[in-house]
Length: 354
Image 1 (cartoon, helix red, strand yellow):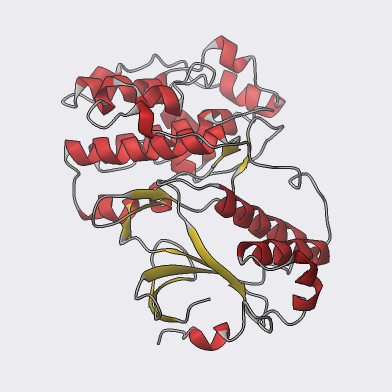
Image 2 (spheres, one colour):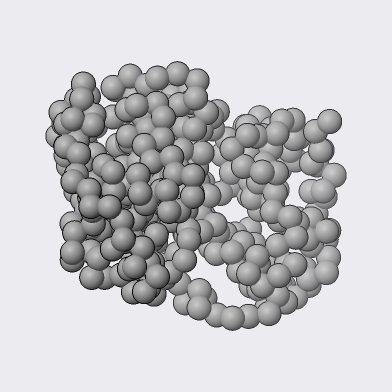
């Protein structure tokens, strides 16, 4: 593992730093995950993110370049460094049409690949979309990612970008939740501000209905929670606002695509692959250069209820595999994370910024 010098705190994630690889001269990002083995749920989430970063190899997905564990058992993910994220970019200036098109194209191109692997990101938002000076875009932070179409309930994703089917506590949701989030991001790029800035989950759902209207009956029929069903039925009846009216002055093709991405019923929502073929993205669409995953991601570990020590052994095994070290040596690394030939000396190579 190359020596690196940390020199700056990054704004896009807590405990993340920019650094320089002193051997190659390349700038990298280092994400520190503190005490991942303090609880099984944290260990599992970290293991899941590592497995995904190793498996998802695509130009629009952040690439893992190194990983190690400190003597205090903090984990460090080392990835390529991009200059900013979409959240900060949107705060700094309005985006011109060609940039909106190119960024949306890359988001959907990355989602097509992720979804083809049977993975749902579940937390797509501007701060999880990294951009460099060449306008190359990469999706990051797969800590909440899950298998496609499982029995899933509860709150995931940041509220502004949360699909309505999640708030309606559907027993099943799928990759369509990421398309909804991408649609919210698309609208934010067009207008320079969040489309659905809900103050809480009730307000969030209410402002969605102010634009899309009362949920159709076939959507209401899928609600499994009696409390949620009662809440939805007690909402004032709303007629949908035409997108051409709400987004007056925007490119008609942009409005058409946005409406397809923000369809209430996820079963009727456009897919990432279909969206790539939309006329709005014609300047960049190339079906020969929009790859899918070679195989489905292996989620066999995901339903396991394991103790921390087992997750720890599995994590070390994955790290050794990343460094092409024989997994039979896993047990030798437990308790002495930096003593092996791969990880030796790394703690000294990282300096906390002042």
